Length: 91
Image (cartoon, rainbow, N blue to C red; front, side):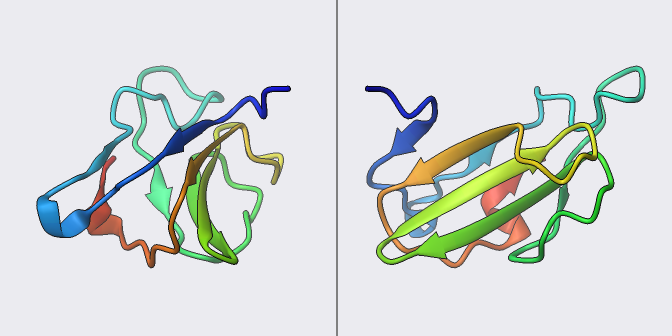
């Protein structure tokens, strides 16, 4: 059974890996293509366009909320415990 999310193995910021999300419209409520706002480990606030991450054991999950309902509209699974910062992304 599929989880419906992508898994990234062997992500390394030290090797200049970045997650490119700039082609995803972060706010489905506005016309055009808006960039995500990286909020770190904070919970979604209800504002469309937020990007968060959370760690669970030895895995990390990056999620985005594009409509402001405080529910992840997509999630990317990383098979490693990673402390993300905004510099890890192209938003």
